[in-house]
Length: 490
Image (cartoon, rainbow, N blue to C red; front, side):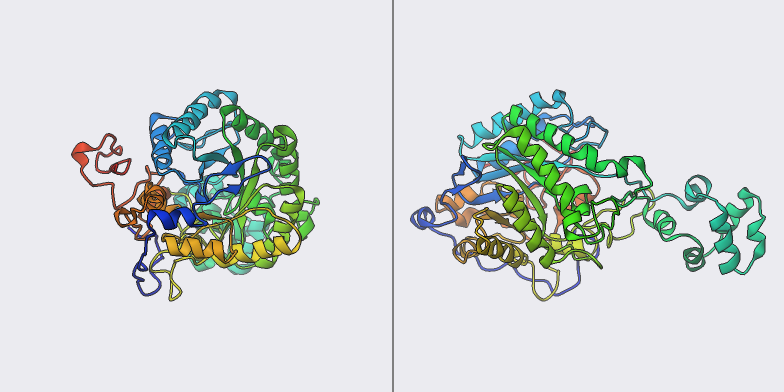
């Protein structure tokens, strides 16, 4: 299974891999310690970024399957393991972990305890904190025209003028809705407003610029407290730190986007776009103190028309470092604005368009290939930080799955930590196997994004390389009984 629309270029073979022996691994930068905050040190510079496995309860509570999932990554003893994007609000969000109430703390504490046990205390565990706005599934056209379309005088006027039919000014509402529903897509696009047409084709999606909505206008007042309370719960649950999710298609990233033209002081300029992210961080820092690592994941490039680019990311990175963030984890793309049209009854998924393909590049991305494709963004941000006198650690990721590439990134000063999500999913033991000089045993990710296809459907995320292996002996199977939920042990 590949990500829809991802097969755009020639298929790239996996690069040849040379694995270190134990002595070389011991001498390497990859397996050397690095600071993570003012008082915390990671045992190695290996990093497993946040991945959502869809194993929580529908109420956002930790399950045995969550505990086993993160315990399995801890078996590989990465320097840092980041728990999935975890919702800071106490609202329904499906089988995604939540931290918006104290009742979530016991389950999260159990997860932390298992990671510490399985890694023998070597792995530092962070939790990623996320906020997101409302999004609806793509409606059936009849549902859209019957229930969601707002019929007002402006709509009647556009229909009358652009369709050349003054009857639209006096039709009863039911007849008008039926007449519009019968139009072809081109004529509908000329009559409906841009947001209305998008809601028909993609499903309605709230934006941080929807200042006519009270709860959106109030975000600068509500989010700092929500993030701060969530971070305090993370500390109480035993996490080593938090990663603020300022990336991809979600609320905080949308404030940082050049598309954010809010007129209330929280958009419209680089300083305005930075205002809420900095206020959120300040609230979190005040709540958890200076000795609890707080960093963020944000975009080096949005990869959408009119979106933020590396120049914006450099400015944001320096502002975050100056404010005292303990690390910056750099990502790319993953936006709703260029997502593929979903099927009726499904919601738009922000990793299906060009920006999503850049976020998780596959072996069919284009002639450049997926391997280390996004490292240059982290390198530019790190160089700007160092030039400004900041020692803030920078994390890079994206198609990194060999020792030589990881070590070169560190030795060239492109980053301070090397993240690998898909390779760690393919083989959670790969960090430990490299360190032990057993690289030949590593199960290598093929970068087909089979895992992402499952995530898109909110199915339990697995890997094609192991989810059908030895099903008879598998301790846990997916809901349909056809896939392993954990990789084989070594």
